[in-house]
Length: 265
Image 1 (spheres, rainbow, N blue to C red):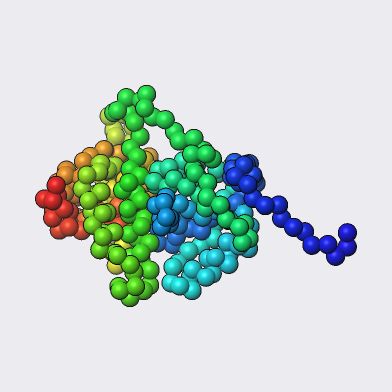
Image 2 (cartoon, rainbow, N blue to C red):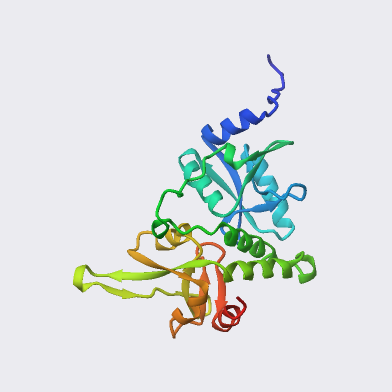
């Protein structure tokens, strides 16, 4: 009918789950500070959740408002072909819920109701991929707060976030990259490095296999799995420290910090 106003159907749990599994795409705010989905802790039930918008215009309005509050984000379109990897990565960073938004409506959905978490229980311990969701989550919360362009007194309880992150680093295992060149007996092993903006050299380390794969990309890199306590002794002489997850939270750990942290356990 000419002039009729279209009314959206009310969202149901079932319709949201179906959209999250089969829609052509949806829209997610990514944090510039972490290069990952922006994560929020629900103040009521303490779920670690991300936002998913059905409509691009709603996401753009949300991102614009957040940027005005010095919370830098970017609008990201997630295609259907990316869903499996996207949900797998959410499990990997400790997210357990999705807050789905459409216009003025919103509803929370548990991640386990949308996608099944990979089961590695039957894989021998030495062959299991390294995952570190607790460390990832604490790093995300810390960086989201610490890198906001706000006075220190407006960044919330940054000290407790830092203490939690340090505690998780100390009790974690990490992957150290090894650059492999040549074949067979001609193979040579070197340590790859990254440089910061002023040219300082850092040795990359990774909280999990996902972060290692982001960094390795098409390069032929191997890795060593090590406890944190061994990392100070494995730091190359020319490096100022480690950079944790350079394609993610990009956290610099100076040599002096490492030595102090290694004594805390």
